[in-house]
Length: 525
Ligand code: MAN
Image (cartoon, rainbow, N blue to C red):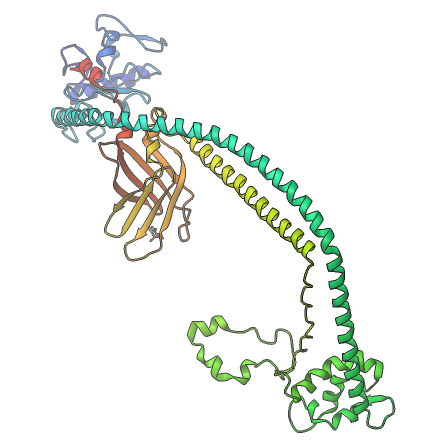
């Protein structure tokens, strides 16, 4: 079966093209199609072929016969017969390349020398390696010159960065010392304050007692006055002098016509009697008087009930549109009684007694304690300020500004980029933002997250994440591609996915020697 399959494929290939066992071609070293120069010696037409994984030895004619013999695909470097095969294009004049062998003769030009599409029944691939190579070399040359120019600037940046770091470290030592001293002063001030406050408290105790007594006396006088007024009113209202004020006795007084319909109803009168039909003096003082007093005061013009919206429609009408909506007052919040104008209890004017003037000695103690309190507050603030500065420096020292501190001096600076719609801002190690040209609200596209480049150079890319949330979407985030240049500048900003931004930032800090492909190139030329 295997033989049949091989023969079938073999003969069809033989008939259709000149590929079988083609010993190629583009370079002077003869080797089967798809084999790199470095592996050419493993394919010797004079010997049997040993699969690279040593699993089999096959006659050399079976190499590139479009039938897969070796499990590792090594017998079919130039066909797509093996699922794991690798096809090598020499790409003379440009960079050599390895392809998955499934891409051989698949109708797509992968190799710039066109060697992967040799069947030519679907597509003809021209050899464009020379052009590409020239372009790549020019680009490499340009980069090399840029790196050369940028490296001097980078050295200066590094020097500044290292100096900054040293200064910060020195500052930290000084601050730690200052903090110790500030804490000592704070403790001292606290002790003084506590002592002086104790003396102040002691001296003030007698005044506080006097003030409390004065307050109590006033409150009692107030209560007595209130009771007297209530009693007088009780006597006045109890027209039949039976020792009770009854509903009928209140009904004769217009003051209690709450709904102003010309008569005092039983319900209205009962309201003032705290829902009873008749009450004696004691209950009158405690339960009815608080209801009655505001109405009597209102009658006497001593205070006005609060004006409700219903009563002043003009004012309510003044509020227009949204404003009126916003201002909509919650109605019936407390009083469910159909908007009748219920006067609130007048606030008892419990006057705070004026503080008693201190004697000279006490005043001196109070002044000293006040001074000590202020001094302690200052000392406390001084410790807090130093701690904040220490935290700032520690944050700085924890940041990764590159292996030679070359990115350090970018911290604290911001770089703008303007397109037709927005002004973007990159503040390295802090944030990225977007400001619409037609508005004034800045949107945060991300806060400094981390270096995010590939393993061999993580300093190629920065991540700023946890920005403002996208409407109906995730939080905004930005990547900053950091490339070598002789200036510090944002050269482009795009939004490849909604709310994911890509900045390109050039800076001398990113200039580093590029590992060249020259050796590879020489190998194949
Ligand atoms: C704003 C900008 C855009 C973003 C949309 C998402 O218009 O931040 O960049 O795509 O919001 O709604």
